Length: 223
Image 1 (cartoon, rainbow, N blue to C red):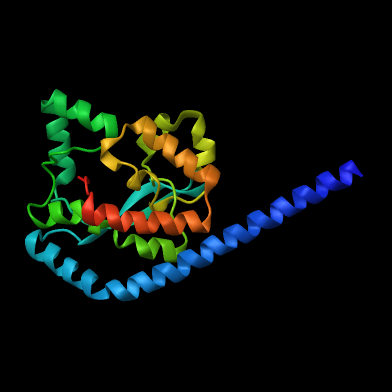
Image 2 (tube, rainbow, N blue to C red):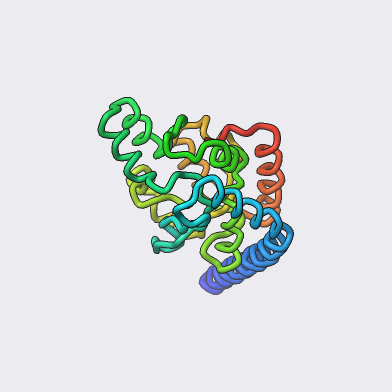
């Protein structure tokens, strides 16, 4: 009887997980379709502003990140950097040891010399550069809410937590974005990602979405 009960409990958990994954995917599709339709005028305006301010490269680019099951995915973003950004970064890292230390800590620079003056800074501050990722959510590469979509160089910072990270899709927004973002340590970011994975639910996703809007409008610390 105990063996039967154990199997039945496992069956219930499996069915519950399948239902929750279906519910999350359905939410991602519906929310991304709504967002894309609503944002069409914004997409067009930003596209034109980038092309006028910084010609010579596409206004939208695909950045290689790590997705579910450790597979590489292409995450879409509005371009906020000048066309020769890689060369500028390489030069700065080679000639400014303090800048190199800052970059290797979080893979970001507070005063980034690669950013397109004006429009690039604004897009980043308001996280508008990430709006094309709703297409990723629609296609299934990302979820609306999830852990940070990281680059390959960041994997060592997750250590043994990599296996858990690979178990879910990364998100456009997530728990770390509404918990301090650039004002917290990388270790805290990893801890927040793990906390989200362990306690995720549709209701919590909706709460994080509302908090994300609040943070962008009133408590923005993005760069």
